[in-house]
Length: 493
Image 1: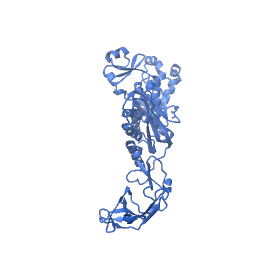
Image 2 (image 1 turned 180 degrees about the vertical axis):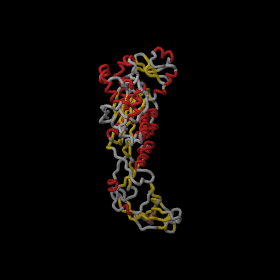
Image 3 (image 1 turned 90 degrees about the horizontal axis):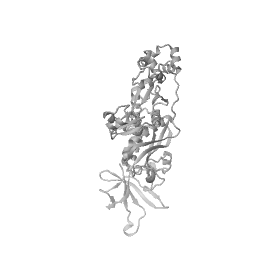
Image 4 (image 1 turned 60 degrees about the horizontal axis):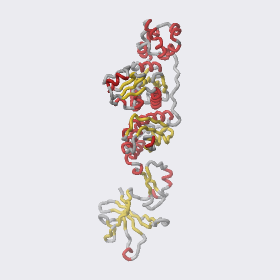
């Protein structure tokens, strides 16, 4: 089934300057010295579209005035189009700040039209924009419904009824002839369609008929689809200087939405991103503050990236105010499909475990979340090395570092950082109670090149049946040191 979403972004250019402009105390956008858009606070004070600058200043002397910027509006439209590529690769930019999205093949993936519309609206809010969303079986039909806030039409019959009731001045080719249509009593698209086609074409041109035929599903539609760039770099300038790193999250979320659309368009997953916090320029210029996010598992989901950025920004102290944000995708790789096994793993999937590691790294720092990397050495003190969990250690490398027969040995899971010297009572080592040897000796003779170790390790059992890992030094001294010395080196679970 072919189904389109028409998304008309409100022509509120102030949104381009500030994602949270609606929370402003009072802001107004002017075009040719007249009000084009006003924030809720300004509208509450009596500011209305079309009002002159002087009238606005009389009502609100402290109002913030902004001049409309078509360049920034076009940039905002392209930003929204890039972000919406995460739902379908077929996104087109239409007239009058409207996006057309072919979502017929995406309905099942996102759980139906209602769920998909909710996702699109959520993405639009994350970008800081507002708009009108409609659905229709044709792209031009969706465009017209969105321009008039006419809701959704899922079938061609219902679309025809909705379009027939729309005003005749809605199609752009008909606006130049609005007076003529009123003079002949043609006030709706339904009445326009009942006019003789040859006469309508001679009077208004072929473009009007082509648009009507496309909207009603009687002619094919061709569009130039939005193409994602080959590499990703996004940047936004902030509406005001931010002195708290946590306040940068809203702008960062807008950049992440663009990144998600770019990743889905190229079927890629990101392994490392860098958020650059840009500071003042000029004499007090300083280099941007980087916020690096390294992921244990490549992802293309915006919610996870935003959660990691929130943790990092909450811990960051700014040395200078931030005036702009930039986001780079440093490492990407082809997107891997999810592993849907018949029997899910207990305690969560591998992806859940990796996301937990990433969250811990964001909170505690990469130097405090480590993984074990075995070394090819029999000495317990040097048989393991701790490296950051972000480092990719292949299982073949990990296995090659293990001595060939070490897996068959009984080793405890908890090795003490420093062995504890044991007391001797009745010629037996003592640790809370006399220890009884419960295994044969494991002899270690290694380290002649750096730190020689000659030890006999045993599994010892206390009277409470607790198991310990103890060793006896084989090289003893003379005199008082002639007797063997025993040490506790590990505990069994």
